[in-house]
Amino acid sequence: IKIMFWLTVSILLIILYLVFKKLEFSYMLKHPYEYADKIFYGRFKRHLDYQNPVDFNEKINWLKFYSNTSRWAELADKYKVRDYVQSKGLGQTLNELYAVYDSGQDIDLARLPEAFVLKANNGSGDILAVPDKTKITSAKIRRHFRGRPQFGVTTAEPHYLKIQPKILAEKLLREDSGRSISLIDYKFFCFNGEPRYIYVCWDRDMRKVDHLRETYDIHWRPVPQAYPDSGPYKAKSCELPPPQSLAEMLRMCRILAADFPFVRVDWYEVAGRPVFGELTFTPAAGFIDYYTPEFLLELGKQLQLPDI
Image 1 (tube, rainbow, N blue to C red):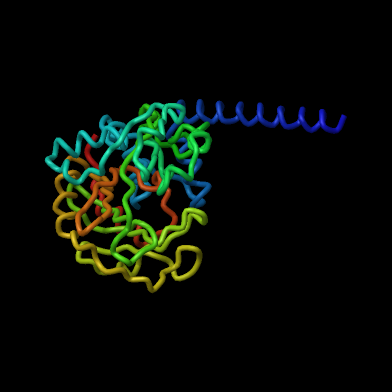
Image 2: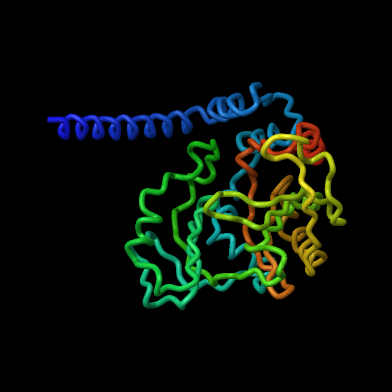
């Protein structure tokens, strides 16, 4: 009897959860402005000011709903963006692509090299690195990618809902600078085609979802006001040498970001050469909480909103 009781309770909880997710999805689609404001208020204890956005987060949310986002879905798609990079004459920066799948069920390990990385084209951080395919099974891969939530719902990013989900198999890149236990991620904040700041992540530990971070200007000087003096994102003394290809990264950022009031262009560096990562129009979905209010205002000043 106890087993039946708890089984019934579990089934009811699952049903309630699915109903809640469906209602949440429906609400976000019908009322995206209000939904974003709800998230924003929960994070910062104040409402979004769509009429007079000032700081970076407010302006990113304004861009979501009031600007021309017709190309966002295409360029935020980690698969389709490859065509855009090629069209800009930067195809040499693309990581080697082995295969593209519609789902985890389609992945054929026998056709992949001994080492590779799998990643979703429509999400953030959904990556499975496979340094040795003899130590992983198709079943584990399917479990990893099974039942992934539709990215963009809980973050009020409607453009992600327009991306047809895919799984990419690419070359497994390895950090070779000796400066980090993981690939160093160089994220360039670009305003009207001009890179202004570089958010850098390194020493990623995927088990702890943790990493070191620093923000630099384009001359590779740490931005002193970027991080608070206390809390989980407090400033740390962890300065990193610049990448060898910094000048080339800056040049190519200007090419890729030229058509947009804001876009973040991400790069890696392997053997001293830049490797394209992705384009992001809504960093942290417009709810960045790791920067100080002062630096968010400074970023907001850089972002000139288009006329509507």
